[in-house]
Image (tube, rainbow, N blue to C red):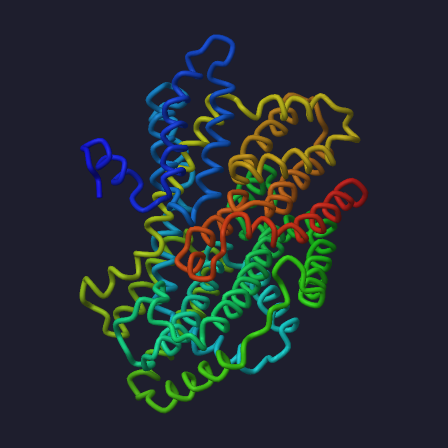
Length: 503
């Protein structure tokens, strides 16, 4: 109990976070303005320190959601002059499509949960081989990400994970499938005989989630619509869908093959947390749940599944042919599903937005850090270093530089900076069109492949880290980095070799 007013403020600050964490964040907030104005240190060094601090808040996401500590750091950065509000707004405007995607598409997926749980329960129960199941998740995520969007696919995977976890956790806590009120984040009611199986189930889900997340990167790099920066690079280069695919194929196809092989090898070798199988007790509960749902499914429920299936088919068609911005397609999906499935009350619809809005707010904070990078030219030395090299060395070094910078910041921002610089070099006559095309491939693959090293490297990974499923299955920043490491090494080496030798 707080004895003084100051202790009360400290208790309230960042809520239930550990006291050491609160003191570290306070130390950051105190030291940043001092170093910013200190002679010999200045804005450039202070900007890099801010990046390190922000990454720390992401790494500690299970101690405290990064929005609050990261937001405080971003507000202070703007207040002392590391970036301007106008610069932040510019970053937001440039990424409006991503914001709309998060707000509306994730909510649209929420209304498909019945269909997703139905379909993936059949897959989970039908495929007993963990290696084959992992490969299926990875391939499905790659294919969907190539024609849809990595964040959309990640939202689907998260929804599936939460669905499986909540079903088992409810029964393991002594409740029935149809019980409405249950907190699957609270283990206090969990029966002792289920605790060990729950830990194994968490490890099982973690591995599937990571395979799927990497799959979004493997597929997302291949096509014009796979990732936001792909569209940006294609627009600058003047490539259509087919040309983009064929120019990237010498790099993306070998990486896809070795990525899928890595998936199987990880499951067979059982390293860094992979290879854990589905506990039989969990399989039994999921089988009982599937049978229970089948028996109680009414014509109204079947009609709802049909509507969801039609909407899912429309979603794939609309995204594959890019008939509108992704976020707007998500809004259409929300309207169609709620209208035809009778979800017409405001509080029913409101639940769909609970998952995406905290992450959307965090993304705006992230754009504030990107604005600091832009205004303080923090990446300029790396850009200049690469462009000063011999032309034959530039593709390989661009791949490395883009990968490293994307892993610590944002791959869309890094791609924007580099493609702008090489386009300026083309326009000035410093490089040929053929060399520009080669460098553009290096920029795209460099920002997409090595960036799987950290959750902040790709929006889909960051979304997974800060989603509802991460704390349930104990998927921390450090664990994500460790589990992604084998993929990072293999994809980076093969990608680098292909960029240097095959394009």
